Length: 134
Image (cartoon, rainbow, N blue to C red; front, side, top):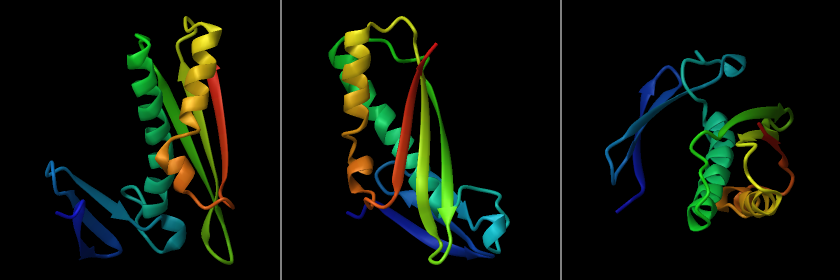
């Protein structure tokens, strides 16, 4: 079975369905590339996937070590390049609980950088990742 099925709905919009769950997402072309910008663009999804993947891997490690990350948040910023138009940098800023001990912080930070999305992105895409403990 395929992972997802999608259709073009017109006006630079797609609708994709996750086949195992039935969940759907819509993508729009960004305003700076002829679109409406009313939903994630495909490149927004790439950038957001990096943060989500890193958080998921940290969550796996946290569960293994009985650490609570339920209050953790992150922001993702995508930087586009021109000629060719492509992602040139993705910034991910994590906000994690200040109560995490130093040893566990280092463990989580190392784990984040091993996520499959981080390892799959082209090496020319700069990944700037920061961890704030609040």
